[in-house]
Picture (cartoon, rainbow, N blue to C red):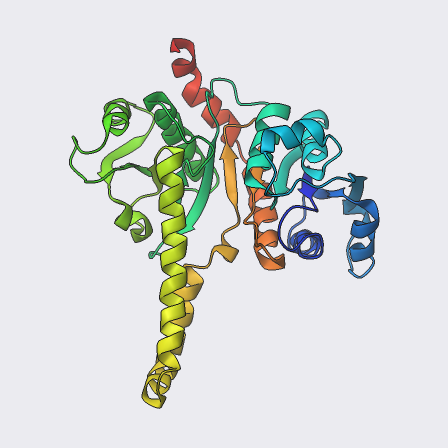
Length: 337
């Protein structure tokens, strides 16, 4: 199995990307990595690291797509960019199982959709991050930005794909699936969510438990939360902002007085455990569900630890039969559309 790495995607490339990837190879056997990007820059970082040379190769790509560029135009004009070359390798190399990048989300999604293949029956892929919850597990939220305008049937497919992932990769036998809405009552929500609700409640292949509110995403009461890409992205960014604000406020309060500092010392283990539960660096990236091969978008600010976990996430996702489960579950729906 090969995992294709966009070495020049993200705020801390190529150093942190390469270091994190090599750390993943040291932690886990069973896969090789292919770094795609500027050959000289990659080789320079590799020269400072210890690694199994038999498991690492480099493919040159001289161009880089920035976050300020229009994704589809950049994909078309920068054919020798690390994202484009990596996506083509994923499609063309039969041993390539996954593609991981911390680069421009739009560019990664566009390259995957335009240059690789979707699973049979999938109308639209969905960007699906795993959010740490208060029970120590993870909740998948999808879609989080791949589709800002969705139809009810898309949300139904998101639910099926998310349920298959959590079952196959996370070992949850019967994942609880909920629909993000502005209330828990069956008739709550906009026209799209009400139509999606009606489809979800009659779908035999998922354990649909009804509507849920955004405040409960971190509760751990749900395994899969379904939304269209616009509202899913808002929910995700709101969670990230709220968590960052809480920890920043706690830090400021601890420094405000000696009494607060003493209290914080007594609560040190509790604070550390809470931070660990909510730390995205330990969870990997967002899978683009619906593609024939695994595509994972790492956080743009990922450093070595976060990227290591994203590479391992890609490996685990590629080692089980997620694709087959999704294709099987969607086969009947695909024939009807």
